[in-house]
Amino acid sequence: AKRAGRDNFQFFTPSMNAQVLARLTKENALRQALSRNEFRLMIQPQVRLEDSQLCGCEVLIRWHHPEWGLVPPDQFIPLAEETGLIQSIGLWVLRESCLEARRWLDRGLPPLMLSVNLSALQFRSGLVDWVEQVLAETGYPARWLEVEVTESVLMEDPEHAVVMLQAMKALGIRVALDDFGTGYSSLAYLKRFPIDKLKIDRAFIDGLPDDGDDIALVRLIIDIARHLNLETIAEGVEKEDQRVFLLEAGCQQLQGFLFAPPLAPEDFLEWRQQHTS
Ligand code: C2E
Ligand code: CA
Ligand code: CA
Ligand code: CA
Image (cartoon, rainbow, N blue to C red; front, top):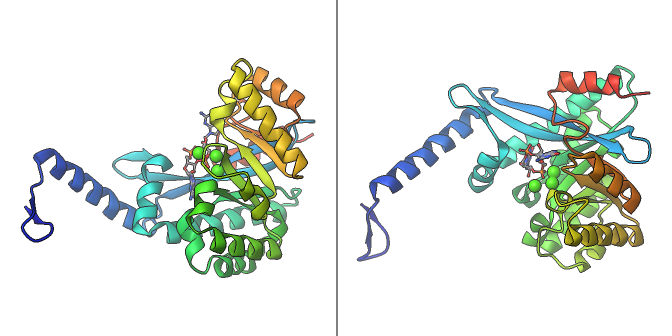
């Protein structure tokens, strides 16, 4: 039994016990994952709609546990955020991404926008300093780096987030608003934050080209973006008729299984060679 409050005893039921144990086990494993070199990066192409040319890529982390196999990010990123481990994991992701993309430049490949996801906790302390340091260390140019943040990340501490993003912009880094339309922020946020790009969430793309609500919402988002001079990218594009709809609606970029899933770095390079005209 665990003492909670003064005369208040809480007893763990066997199933709670198992849950707590599973969480602790996972947390311990996650703590060691970095030093045991269990993380990998996957890279998903982003293409321009008008000519289907590669224009950028999103970096997505994977955890390969020696016993459990592949643990998807949805099953460890939240825990990494709760425990603060996301700070060191996020730094690792950024450094490895910049190193990888730097190698592409060294090979003489044309520059490509590199998009990296950021969590709320990473905004707390020293974000701009360590981003600057990674860029200096890796020699990767700031203007080819983009960070993806969600509405909820910005809303956690809006005043602070504005300052952080402005400092990032001053370094030349671009900002994309991820999962756009799924949060509960007001449109005023679009004016307040120095955002370059809206990522239309997969939830709206799924219903295209048939669902009337999704059609209206996607058109509206693209319209708003156009008026505010923001770029648009649709994520989770899986079908050709979705691509055709988005082309007609004036969306600028696409990402999704229709083009490629997230790829291991060597597969991404191969994909890149095959898709460059
Ligand atoms: P997200 O940032 O919204 O990433 C897009 C997710 O959609 C990825 O899932 C990607 O694999 C998946 N996806 C891409 N194209 C398609 C498609 O056509 N159809 C479908 N059904 N799915 C598609 P993934 O890799 O499992 O990542 C899940 C989430 O985990 C990400 O959502 C992001 O929130 C988080 N995440 C992943 N890597 C990182 C990271 O390095 N740092 C942080 N902070 N979060 C990360
Ligand atoms: Ca993302
Ligand atoms: Ca997203
Ligand atoms: Ca998402």
